[in-house]
Length: 390
Image 1 (cartoon, rainbow, N blue to C red):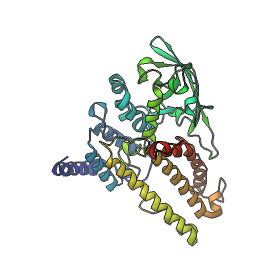
Image 2: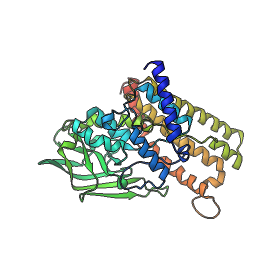
Image 3: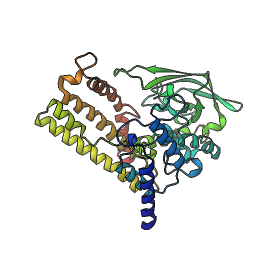
Image 4: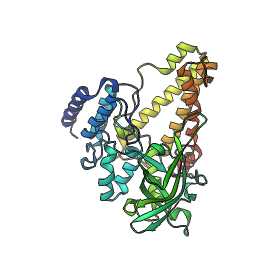
């Protein structure tokens, strides 16, 4: 886009944000995930989502017919810059805009795009991911959940596990086995299916942190429409891997408009003032913040250097690996800074913030295996990015 046109766009975006973004949305806070089952309690967040959806800023680079604003890459980067200027949170986040949406844009039929994408962009439905099974985690291709064709539908039976937010979701994108008599990678299909039906049961899994972001999901003659098969029958493995590249790219939040803004106050400095720290621990803080800043700059450069904002290929595993390590490192250093007060689980001897931080410390440990274990990411980097031999 020509410089003058881009300058005009920036002026328009700045004026729109200044006039429309509520003050309470400018700074750290929750971002709605959409859907019918989790009410948005904050009226400002509801208003901001409605405005963002109307403007196309929940999915800025999607075509207008699918609920987006049809922004080019340069315009998109300007929008990000202006949202960060006022510390505006994204109007919407979730697997719809970050994972299945881009995948449908690439592999979906026209009908699938028209039926699903506008509802994702408007925050009307929340999605979950049906990949892992009790005996198919890192070796995902060993999955056994079956889908058998029956008239206009597939009948689905089996079990998924670690399905984040399944109990709050309206739809699932699910890898299923549609041909058990061929090599395991060749008989897998990707289906979309509604969660509100008698054949699907979800059961939250209580973690060591005390919360339950994950679920077991059971399919007992659940139905998926044949016209919600994504891509070709028995050719879902490649599409499923491509979807994971969207997840691992670190762009899933960015695709919703802007990353959650950070507080103007350094959270580590706040803890150091409250609890004290020796020189060695302060060195850890500085090193961590340098790595985190480098990652965020790399994330933005990835968007800037991509072709029309498209998600890159296997190198996305680098982003996922670094993200997991940074999140764990962040929680660990904050626990160390609190000393023994970083071990509070319950009781009057600890503040609510200290108890919440302890539970977060335990919760974030899962990042080593979530979205593909760190070992899997390193193997992908070695083979697909660096070209090293097996």
